[in-house]
Structure formats: structure tokens, C-alpha cells
Image 1 (tube, rainbow, N blue to C red):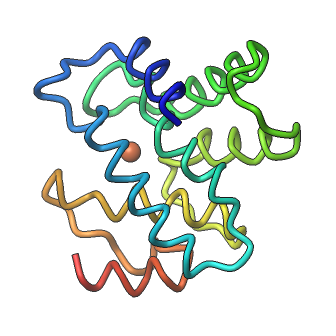
Image 2: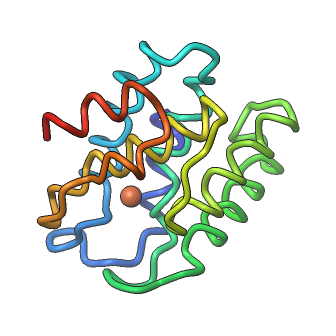
Length: 148
Ligand SMILES: [Fe+2]
């Protein structure tokens, strides 16, 4: 993950001191993903950790940026082509799907995508928003959303 983190930081364009979507957020999301995956059978933890590190790294602003997930997915594909993301094609596809749709207000029945999205939403209190239980995909995410 260190390599991915370095690559994500290299392309990140927002102010590293003031950003709400930068490396500190990514690492909290990664911690959340590890915690949620432990209680979510079938979750691909490596994919969820890659999501945590990469999902916001191509943001162009701190507010509305509806294409940032798609740009992150494209960045993941480039890393894969350069041999920096050692996943099988179907796992890359899962990661790209999780990133493309992570900010569109959906829930997912897929355990890996669910952990990705829940891990991100559990860090919403950083921007003064409580995560909504109805927008949690996993049982573990619902439980933790009551505690933040
Ligand atoms: Fe995020």
C-alpha cells in the first residue's frame, strides 16, 4: 500500500494542509475498511484498502466534483497497466466500480463495494455530517454508524 499511497500523493492536487479529502482522510478510510472487513464475510480487503488510498486522489476541488470517482478509477487502470496494482482483472473491475460510483449516494449488496463505501462514509464526521444508517451497505457499517 505504500507504493499506492506515494502514487496517490504524487497526483493529488488539493492543498495538503486544508484538504478534507487528502492523505489523512484516505488513511482513516483504510483503517475503517480493515475494521469493517473483519466483520464482513466475502470482502476483498486488498481491494477495499486500494479503494481507501485512491478514491479521492483525483479530486479537483473540495466540493461538488461528480467525476472524481471516475477519474480515480481511470487512475487505478493506469497503475494496473504499469504493474503497480497487482490484482486480477475481475478484482480491478470491482475496484474501479467501487470508485466510479462511490459518491452517487447508493448502497451495495456486494461485500467489498459495501465495505469501501461504508468506510468512506464513516469518516463523514470530519466535515460535520453524520453518516446515515440507511446509506450504510454492510451490517458492520450500520453498527459503527450509530457510534460516530
Ligand atoms: Fe472519501
